[in-house]
Image 1 (cartoon, helix red, strand yellow):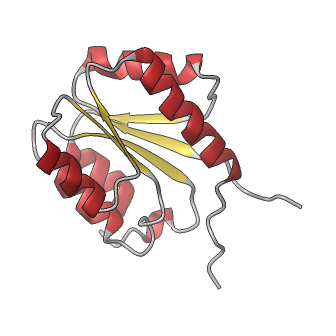
Image 2 (tube, one colour):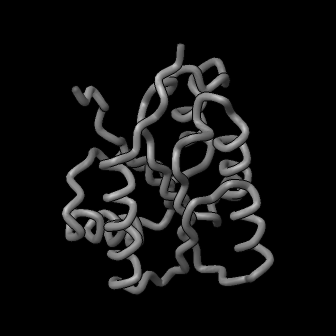
Image 3 (cartoon, one colour):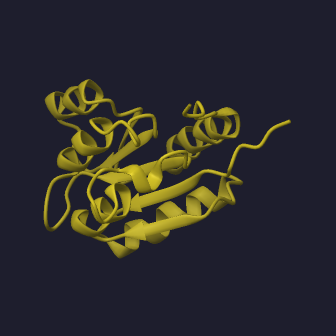
Amino acid sequence: MNNARPVTIIMVEDDEGHARLIEKNIRRAGVANEIVAFTNGTEALAFLMGPDGTGLVNKGRQLLVLLDLNLPDMTGIDILEKVKGNEHTRRSPVVVLTTTDDQREIQRCYDLGANVYITKPVDYDGFANAIKQLGLFFSVMQIPEAD
């Protein structure tokens, strides 16, 4: 019996045009999951970590984070560190979407636990493939139940 809850996609992207394009591409790739969009890091972190900042609010939830690195109030790296450093959110896959193709920054994101790094402007085929892989990933992804 599969009682997995559907994955919620958290999109952190301050550029409205990019956000629309990303959402359109996700839908075109056949992914119907709920997308919760944030235009800055402060609100995204408040959602991810909850009012008490512990991340407990998302315990047992299936989240996929699409993360722009260049946000108006902080860097995506800050968010990535907090998500991957928190016991309740660290298993959530994080896809970094950014205009930077600096090798050091890419390496840093992977070192911090990013699952996929996609450079914008997003090439649709590359993006669709990544999303499809993630689609497969999150259709089979099971967050281990906490005891």
